[in-house]
Amino acid sequence: MTERQHILVVDDDREIRSLLCDYLEKNGFRTTAVADGKGLRRSIEHTHIDLIVLDLMLPGDDGLTLCREIRTRSQVPIIMLTALGEDIDRIVGMEVGADDYLAKPFNPRELLVRIRAVLRRAAHAPRDPLPNEVRAYRFAGWRLDITSRTLTNESGNVVSLTGAEFRLLTILLAHPHRVLSRVQLAELASGRDIDPFDRSIDVRVSRLRQVLGDGGRSPQIIKTIYGEGYLIGVEVEQE
Image 1 (cartoon, one colour):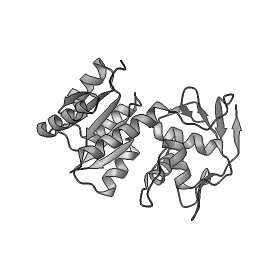
Image 2: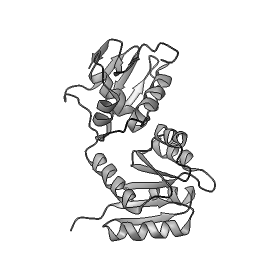
Image 3: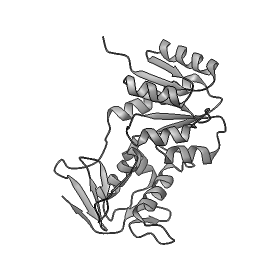
């Protein structure tokens, strides 16, 4: 019998924790529920977690802080819950490494669909469109190592990237001088379609530009082709 996947629910509302755990258990998952960051840290240190459902508003460290902390050491999938449901909360959540988001109040069935979709994508990650012999890319003084999944500058200093940012940069570098639309990038990076108002790709491009020192009005490493998408505008070497 296949072992059930383990979902960690992090929410300070006891009723929500109970309802979500009951619903997920009935749909074939194993669950653990905690109320705050302390419980989250304790859980991920002592047991294997397949996905975290993480509330934005928590006592002590909030969901964004915890998401950012988790991403420094793990690529476990994270779905953020927000009571506000405003674009800025969703954008910031995706920027710090969340895989998906859902605004409260929500239908548990929708959360179940999103959990299954994120787990399905994670099971096939990384989805990097790379030939097996490519170990790294060099571009504009930077080196992206595909095996260790690290980005280093000319001085050899390692720069932190979330899993989503790594996948996006890898895809762009694998297609130098080719324009890729937001829809294409979303499909290659996460295996999902996006709606016309989804800005997650734009947020990640903006974050990558900050990391690469490629900001300003005329970015040269990751260029915007208005009305079409993005492309790498510098020479790329493969190792």
